[in-house]
Amino acid sequence: MTKTHRKAATSSEDSFNRHYAGIWGDERWQDSLLSALQKPTRYACMLNRYSSLEAAKQCVSNPDTELRPLPLPRVESKNESDLPSNCFVKYKRATEDSQTASPSSESFPAPEPSGVHLQTHWNLDAASLLVAHLLNVQHGDHVLDLCAAPGGKSIALSQNIWQHLHADDSPAKQRAMQQRPLRVGTLHSNEADGPRQRRLAANLQGYLPKALFDSRDVTALRVDGTNSKAEYELRVKTASGTVGYDKVLVDAPCSSERHIIQAHIKAKAGGRVADEMANWRPGSSKRLAETQLKLLMAGLKAVRLGGTVVYATCSVEPTENDSVIEKMLSQVEKERKKGAKWSVKVGFNEGRGNEELEAELIREWAEKTKHGWIVLPDHSSGGGWGPLFFAFLTKVPS
Image (tube, rainbow, N blue to C red; front, top):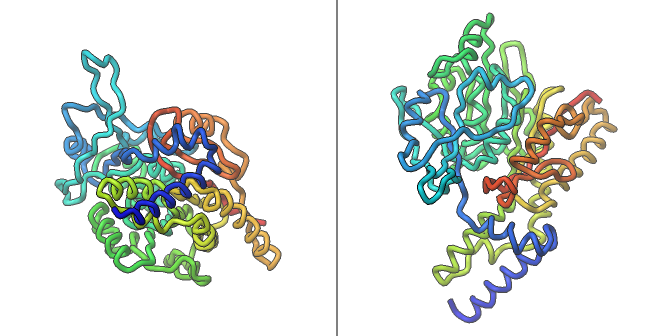
């Protein structure tokens, strides 16, 4: 690295750290949050319910580590007890030197095709599994994942939609099979970029039963969610007409500071400057927030009255998180004054909150922000998950 490049790298890094220290406080940024973001991402593992869970467990098991169910919080009206856990984390086994098991940073193996030719599992940050879990997808729901590539969250959302097609037996599967008429849901996974949309489609086909694609109950869409007409392209088409979604996830493109930090560490080790750090500017978030707001509005227009939208980013920048929610609320109010018949409630339970759930989130996962929650890797629980901001929104009649 030349002296000029080294000076530029130092300047970019200093500016980056000053900016985020100003947001999170110098002490927290320097003493805990930055170092937590510098660590390699820790992964959890989601077993695919449309494949044998036992085969998947064998694929991910290791004699040196212990698989433990991911402690996802209990969600109202979700029959977790009727389904075996399919989300796991690794712990190092207790030894003579260490009497207690401790979280393991060891990676899970790559997925493999099972006996039904579907992939066994997907590895992802547990914060992503938390958000999919909190959307509380039920059997037969119509679900939209607006910014879906590469597909991990879509596959997580899919796990409860078609319980009658689960590979393993369970009370939930039996109950779903006895429904008359059988309620069949929809998963629309959307990605505007062509190559990413093709990768998304291939991933979905690797995890979900072929019959769902033949019936078009699962579709990989390619719709520009920032287009003002996007809601019309995104709607669910049924035999009885067009309907809105029950659940929508808007996991919007964002600054992804953890990626910037880790790319910079890797580049510095090779005597280079990471493009991600060199190109970072404090004002970049304002431009991203404009796109994020358009995507969120598209998601809100596509969901039915009474339906749920979760807005999420993996950014630690409030401009892309709480500020987007504030701008959305202002935009919705403008739409209402123009004649829109709906509004938005922010928070669990249509804005009324959920004391038990929120206490568990604070204890095990996240911290509250003005309008939502943020999972950060320096959380006192020691999980190391995130970052992931999310806000829970319900579309209600105005």
